[in-house]
Length: 277
Image (cartoon, rainbow, N blue to C red):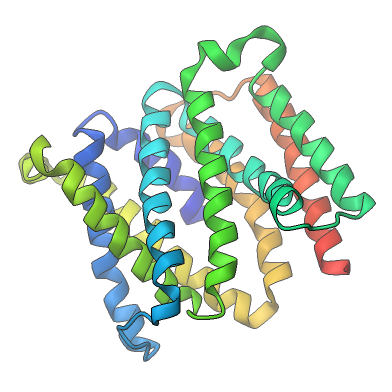
């Protein structure tokens, strides 16, 4: 959770160096390469079952879109806001998507969590003041949260064909190919003109926050169960705010802290409802 949370200010550091097309491509490419030893260590075959092709391809496209939206968001808004808004709104949007499209029947606890989370989201973006539309970054973060929510629902359907590690590898590979097409005409080799700080940040985002942190999460989920592991996700926005303050000097607004706290409680409530049913 610390590695994931600290990824937001690191991403903002990269946003001032190279274009979003190029950074996103290299981030995904390095992540895909870093997954190879993980696959080898876990003895996972490098093949994709035919039934999984459609969902994995669509997931790869959404994954690339999520990476782009996250990058564009931190360019114009604070890194702490990105970590808070995306991490807390995504679980709430997932519940709404499953209710609307998959016939999920929510319990009273689910509904309470969703309403509280949406209220927290309204507070975070200060919807009453019109700040949502004046601060484009927060709007981009909401779109990123929606993209991640759809991706998460697709991931659930892919579990019957693929384990989480191979799923992450293949969607990263497809996303890398998509971003190569996008970045090719934007100086894809410009990263080699950058210094050590840039490469340190890029490697951190590609390897530590994606490959290492994700693998740790999957291993932990297998040991303690997905319900308990999912509860730790609530620490990500906290670490995002703390690391953004430590690395960038970003001071979170009162509305972001209050709304974020409301959404964290809401996500915890939703997780408890899932575990109980």
